[in-house]
Image (cartoon, rainbow, N blue to C red; front, side, top):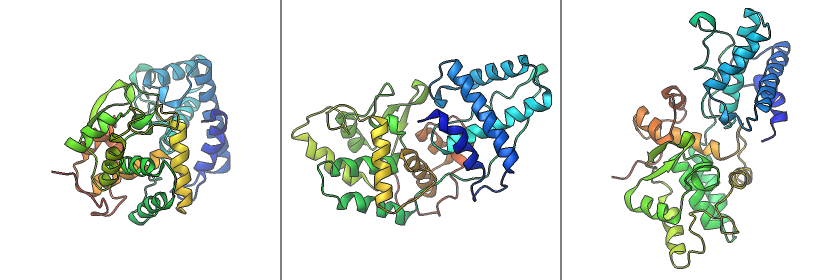
Length: 311
């Protein structure tokens, strides 16, 4: 992730055609400058990624703005623009929640309001697109085809974050033992954001690909990781993102978001379309807020989940 490019990408996002109420050029430019100021604050405090920002950091930022002599009207603008910036980061898969929303307490306990909530919906893959993606991976004859089929299928079924699937950024990454447990019980425990453990029960559409892959590896497990890189170590998140992006492009798919988080969005929508309770889906995905999960309601038609949880 290139932090320096985020203000320009934020500006472009604000004028995208599917924003319900497009922002004027002057407003976009101002909001991009506000985003740049917040990113400078992150750099100043050695925050390397938006996911490291929580409500406490946002309150620290707001106190700095107040101490700088910013007038109340300008403060409200900064709060609104920063909150919208985190909406953008969520949309891009660079943040899982919006810490500004829970930090909007100003002086004397009064809420600081401002800005306008964006109306863009998360991108998802529809059934024909999912089929094109899987068919495209299957058609490629290469040594990691079965691994990639199982990996993409599990993301589409489970909504796991890419860093939970098989990278080095979190405490737990999936091993072959986890794969066997998932196949045997239909569920797996993962440790996700904030070192929080949760139970995930994937849909079963792509389970046959995972079963075939795990069984094939049972005879000669060169690595303990479920989805190892060529070196045998855990696959890095950046590599997984590139693989998903490449397969999407080869399938002729072009979405505002082209990585693992697009598959997570899709899984969330599929679960809801399959009839799962909103709070159950929230728990499976590890969303801090039910509002985040609710954004996926009606993105897919009922039945387009094309799978149900196993008994």
